[in-house]
Image (cartoon, rainbow, N blue to C red):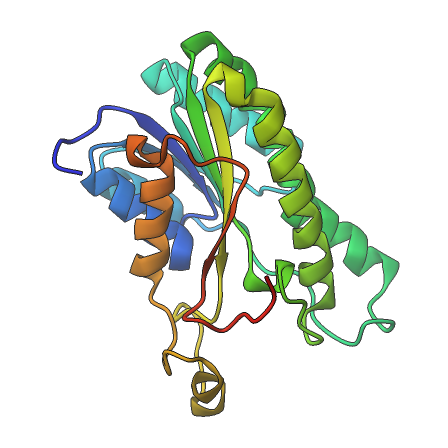
Length: 236
């Protein structure tokens, strides 16, 4: 993108890792950023990037509403949303508890549903808007070590397609980015050896993909799962 945008972007779980990388990349492209995370680090990052921040959790509907209200009160509009989250519990498929599954539903799917309810009327009034959800390659190729994440993020893919179809004519888009092993967490040599590119992905590579999917350059892309995993996934 050669010209800086004047648009406003909400990013959740933005205090570190992929969320912080998305915040930095979008701010560098001219977005006014509105950040939320559970850590107070997000307040400092927002100030550093010339935006505003809020401590809160994507699992709390009131926190999501406060975040949207903050964006509108500060900038009067919302053009883009990056729905990023933490990680669901991992473990054996039938050992994980009902509480683990319900917590992940709030963390990985209902966060997007609730955010969509809040920002879609704003997008409709403006005549445009774009959302990107940070998912996982497990949505396409379920991994035994992360069964909850794989299952619920497959549901997120279905929701995204339904939403994209419903609101495409209004100029509103939604897509998912499906990272593989990313360097925001340690990736050992054995894991790297399984990846065709033989390395972990970089948080900046995820952020650049997100920025593209929010940009006018991807204006005809909606309802898609975009794998960013170095060739790791074999499923179609």
